[in-house]
Amino acid sequence: MKFPPASDIRKVRKGLDVTQAQLASASGISQSTIAKIERNSISASYATIVKLFETLEELRNTNEKNLSAADVASKGVVTVQCTDKVRVASDLMKTTGFSQLPVLRGDIPVGSISERSIFELVRQGKTMDELVETNIARVMEESFPVVTENTPMTTITSMMSNCNAVLVARKGKIVGLITNADMLKMI
Image: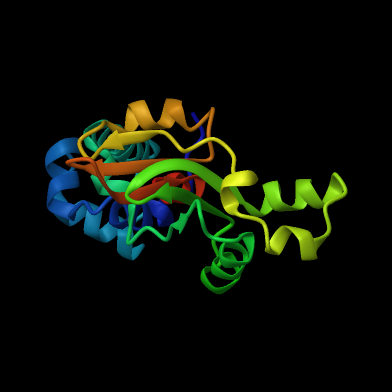
């Protein structure tokens, strides 16, 4: 296994939200030694550096196994209604910077719309003038799958290979969205 430079120990540890004391406890290497390595005031042995990175990797795996949909999901989901015109979705995507949106009928997810799906319709011969006045229900794609807040991220990770996003619900109401960008934040 190839490890990053010793100077990255602090960055990786902070990224995992692990204290020096927690890393010391998990690795068996003293907190003061970890502090000196992070300050670059000592040159640690190869075995010590390997032990610290292996421990950080174990901590990362433990954290990922314990993460749930609620921990990763973006809150404040931006949606459109199936009765809205494509113009509404297009304007929302432009102003929010999102490339895809869930489509609802009331509070129920019924489809999705994305920049890609709109561009595909243009490639098929639809004009932008026609599209912007078309109801989203006529051009929407399949709905994103819906999971509960306590769904483990291991389950969602496997779901994401077949879809671009996953909606997160609490008591039947959509409260979050997990996209590929949210998944990358876990790295």
